[in-house]
Length: 73
Image 1 (spheres, one colour):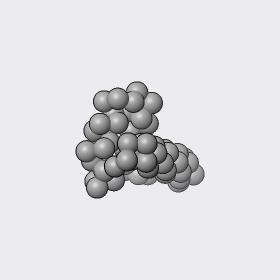
Image 2 (cartoon, helix red, strand yellow; image 1 turned 120 degrees about the vertical axis):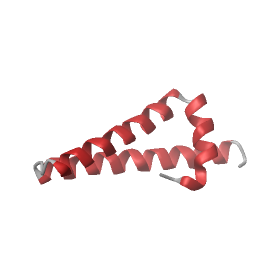
Image 3 (cartoon, one colour; image 1 turned 135 degrees about the vertical axis):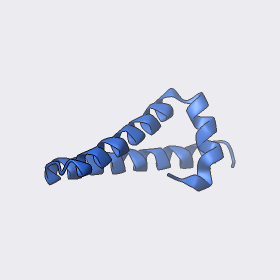
């Protein structure tokens, strides 16, 4: 996710607990979705998890942009 911002994300994860938690939650959701799809879980539940993962991804991206702007990167 956002490979072009890898260095910035590493910095942010070390400095910002909320960002780190969002990043971890995104990864957990990704693992859960993969497991659900393998188990042929209810598609409604899978879609619900995917939407939550996308929401978190958007929040992560906005946090990166804000960090870049605040640090003139």
